[in-house]
Amino acid sequence: MDNVDLIEELVTRCNQYEVKIITLRDTIVHKSRELVSSIRKFRELDRLAKELDESISVTKSRSTKEMEETINVADQTTQGIADRLNLIRTRIRDKSERLKQHQQLLTTLKIQVELEKRSSNIPAIFRMVLGVFTLIMISVSALAVKRWVINI
Image (cartoon, rainbow, N blue to C red):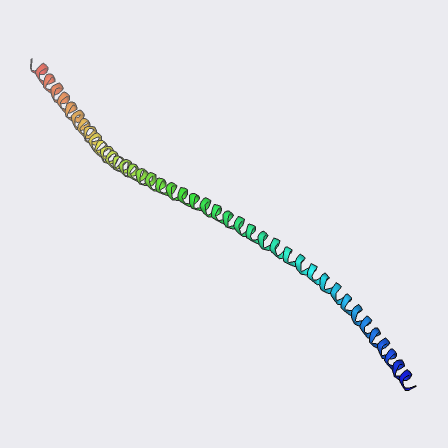
């Protein structure tokens, strides 16, 4: 019996080990499936990361181009404004020169008007004096004629 007990114990242990092996195999199968699932997820994440990286690269490139275009447009606009400012400065200088010339002409005209006023006052006074002198001469002539007529 001793051998039979030993065989039974061996069979029991074999059954226990078989159950453990089956459990371990099931665990390995389960873990393998989880591992395969994780690998698939990692591959998907890797693919998404590559797409995201490519998208970021494209967006960065596009943003860089847009910024360069904006800077170029801003530079052209600034250059245009600077050119217009130079033109405006030139026009202001020209207008200023014309204004100075007109002011000089106006000053000259004012002086001429003053001279004309003064010269027109002199003939008026001269005319008045001449008129008075003429009246005196006529009066004197009339008196002389009267005396002459009386003396005749």
